[in-house]
Amino acid sequence: MKNGAPWAAMRSPERRFHRVAADTIAAAVELCRRRLIGVSDTPWLDARVLASHVTGLDASAIVAYGEHRLPARRREELEALTSRRAAGEPVAYLVGFKEFCGLRVAVDRRVLVPRPETEELVLAVVEDWRGREPDILDLGTGSGAIACALADMLPNAAVVATDVSIGALQVAAENVARFALGERIELVHGDLFEPLERDRRFDAIVANLPYVRDGDPELAPGVRAYEPALALDAGLDGLDVYRRMFQEAPRHLLQGGRVYCECGPATAADLATTASAAFPDRTVSIRHDIGGRERMVLVA
Ligand code: GLN
Image 1 (cartoon, rainbow, N blue to C red):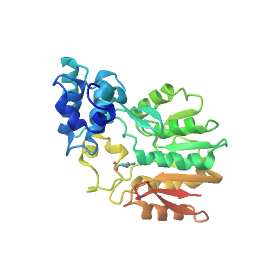
Image 2 (image 1 turned 90 degrees about the vertical axis):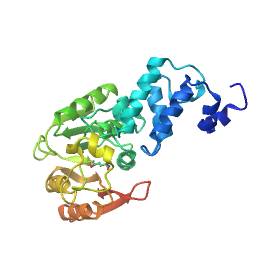
Image 3 (image 1 turned 30 degrees about the vertical axis):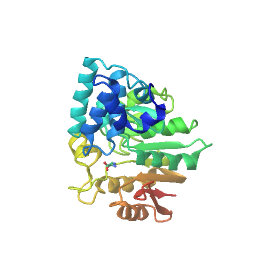
Image 4 (image 1 turned 180 degrees about the vertical axis):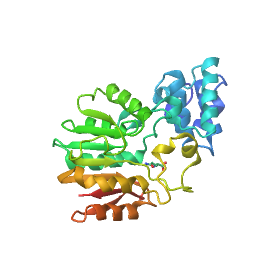
């Protein structure tokens, strides 16, 4: 850094931009960031993640080496990715992965991008079963993010993960192999409990099933346009899939077992009612996510 303290430049990408030549990494990142303002909630983060992807540099190196030249071919790549991002495509599909519970989970358009809220679902399970050897069922595993995170954080857990989508299971298999968790994660194809033996029981049933209501005005347009409808849509009230799940769940839960479901604020109360009807002798509770929204229904 020629003038001033390096952290001053890091704090202020704007100021940095005015000092750097047009063909530098910093200039390209700044151009990207500006194009994403108003399109993405996180333009600065997106710009750095996309720049990392095209350069192979990690996120801090993008800042540290900002004054280095970015070859024209790389700049064009970044511009093309920025255009796709500006059209609404999730960053995770553009770069092919999403960080989830400390794992770099491979994703593509066959699977829902794992959300930070879902990390809280994983943590709820981990809190309850840490130090034990639970048999866990992950319904609708998608990319396998939940199954992999649980197997990673609970080293004595065995996980069965199901999905109705063959494409999703292919992505999940890639992730299971990537994290070398094949000995403790079994992937099975089928709808909810359907591929399991009728009375196979688990300590924990974990599910981030589709819960988006038809025409939900809160669903971000980029989600609808790019992410698989199969992983999102759940009928008029958003409970079509969970209702089917709770019909079968009691016969697959061990005594003392627990159910952990992700939901949206609009579906939480009705999902809790559905869960109580299926488990009249159990305690059903709603938990909030870090943003204060009703996000989980738990059966204990
Ligand atoms: N949380 C997702 C969204 O709002 C929905 C995930 C789901 O339906 N399971 O985009």
